[in-house]
Image (cartoon, rainbow, N blue to C red; front, top):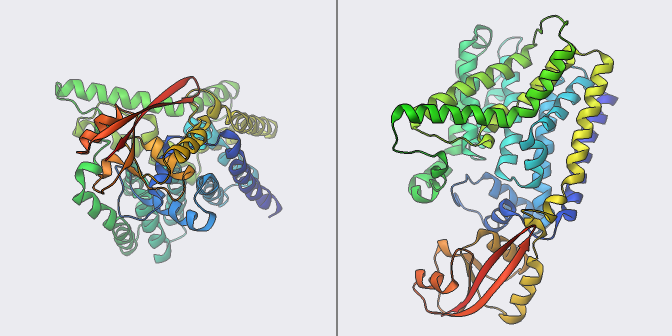
Length: 460
């Protein structure tokens, strides 16, 4: 029990340290933070191409901690801690504290967790956390003795639904779990028909309202489909391009895991063949099934481009699975060295995080505070309309009480307003909104090695 408390305390203290460390990374918001800040100031069934759950949770944290960097950092790191605790609790059913703790630390072998989740991500952070919760509940439902009760199935359904409205691609995880469970006889007999029906009903209830919004706002909700690279090329060529992109995404996501596994395999080549436990078999089955479902979906949909972060719901388990494999092959001294190496990896990432606010792209190190002060002095009380989400989020935070709106949301009110455009001349933005405007020059915002240029105008 003492060892458990130490691991739990380590996960929570790490989250607290990350919250404090966020303030060392710069006074401005990076792109995802700006989006979260802008949208989470109000509740809605939908906002943009992203599902709404993260914005809802951020709104709730704003009510408690106020609207600022502290609330943004609190939510992100609380979610990551929740995911780590869920994984630890699951593994502790079969493993001692040290081994379960090492497997949680092995999430650091995934750059999307070790670096991107700390530096930039929002919705994907929630997807990471809920994916770990979903797997833990699936392990509880599919591992005996006997069949799980209705409470477990209800919790699994709710978690699956929340996962879907955290990031749409999380729907792949419960689908992969269901297919894997139906294929494997020992899991299939543990599926309660009533429980599966309850889980399906619960998941459907959770996603119903956001999907209703999507149905009524298809143009907005489908704004990121272009990233799939669906092209009118020869069908066979699309298949090869899509599967090649999928393979490259898996290699990019799991590259460090693969290198560590190869190194340990060479060092322990004389050890007997690995016999994975039930939890390791579940991770393997989910990853393989998820990869197969992704491949089928790519071929059927004609997509040719896959980003490595889209694999998160199923590829996330590569790190913990590699750790379980390594633990069973290494002796006590090798396990300690593995733990030291993983701890060093986390410490290095922690130390380097402020660099992301100072160098390219350096969004968090941008001088928005000075610009906000200039706007307040030169154009007090003028509503702000902009085509830049980055500017909208930062100026909303730094000019509390000022009206800041995205041009994409329309501008039908009367009176003067300050127009800010990152994409074009501000007068052109005003014309798109059907208004006259007087140019007010431009403002350069340095971030890292780059400079963003914002054009200003006063619209009538």
